[in-house]
Length: 112
Length: 110
Image (cartoon, rainbow over all chains, first blue to last red):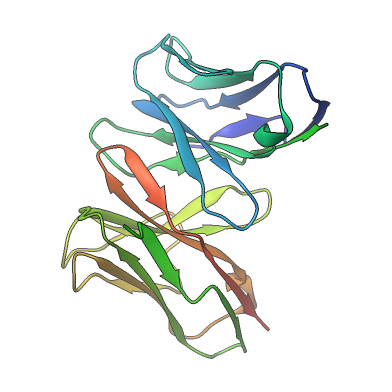
């Protein structure tokens, strides 16, 4: 069974700080996604990375897919209270599949 | 467009009762999914469908059944609810790799 472990599980920081969330596995994934989920709502897709070593930026968020396609990171610069939420990574085990395995999640709280 | 909608939003069942959760999407997506979300465990895939009339098992299918009689609807059934099925259930539909999630159904089984 392929697993995706996220760290840290919980993170509470002050507005303006930087942070990094990690998503790790011992298995190779053909692509990896990051989602943000707010209380009482479904997850919303932020980005999909498909190439080993790929880096994508979305405003203050930077996503990286590991060279070996086994891990990924999400870096937030100058965090804001609006970044508060549950961040989930999800990996597709094989190319062409739309069946994703989700990580355990990182709950982020940004204090004003 | 409403996107992905789920009915009902909340439900309380007694052990042994049955119920059906309805998911509807208006984006003409081929793929649809049912997940459950439990604290500290992320989202786990229950069943999914790659098109009208097709269904397949996911990671945790036991105790659930599904049907996709129409492309826009994906139903999740619990024949005999158990307390272990207390969870938040999310439906999603996808076009390529882009999954769109519904708002969820919070189910409590007493």
